[in-house]
Length: 230
Image 1 (cartoon, rainbow, N blue to C red):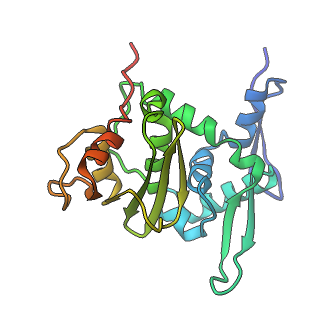
Image 2: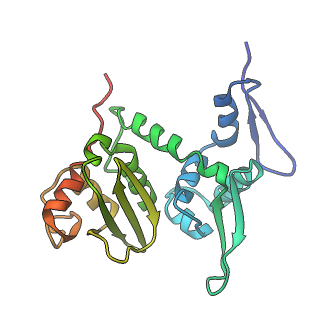
C-alpha cells in the first residue's frame, strides 16, 4: 500500500510526493499545502502585490505566504514581475496554465458549499465573493439576461458581464454599467444569497444599488446557495 511521502529540500519548501500516476495526486503535490489554493484564488482576476494577497487571507503569516508563492512559482503556476511605470511595483500573477485552474476552484467551491459545515458568514475576500457568483449562477436563468454589473468593494472594483448564460468577471471599473452595487462582501452575501430587501442606500447592511431596481432583482435571482448534502 502506497503512502504519502514528505520530502524537504535544503533550497526550498517541503514537497509532498504521493507516488501515484493519477493527475489528482499530482495536483495535490502542486497545491495540496495549506493556503496554496486560496493564494491562487486571489490571483484569478489579475496580478496582486504581496501585501494585497496577505490582507485578503487572514491568518497567513508573511513567512508562509512567501513559502507558498515560491512553491507555486517552482511548479509553473505563479510568476512574479514588476508592473511598468507609473505603478512600478512587484506583483504576483497566475501563469496561463495556473489560470486554467479557475473553473476547478469554482467547481470545488460549489461542491463544498453543500456541506452542513459551510458557514457563509465567515470572512470572504472580494475575489472570493466574485468567484462565488461564477460558481453559483443559474445558467438557465442567466440565458435570459444580458447586463454589465459593476461591484464597488472597499479598495477594489470588479465588473461582471452576464451574456449567453455565462457570467464573466474582471477587475476594474465599468465605464457605463447597467447596474452598480456598492458595499462589502458581507453585504453582498446578505443581498444576493440572503435575498435581503434591496435598498438604494444599502440600509441594513445590504448592497447599495445604482440602476433599475427591477434589473437588480433579476440579477440577484440568478444566484442561490446549493441544497445541503444529506
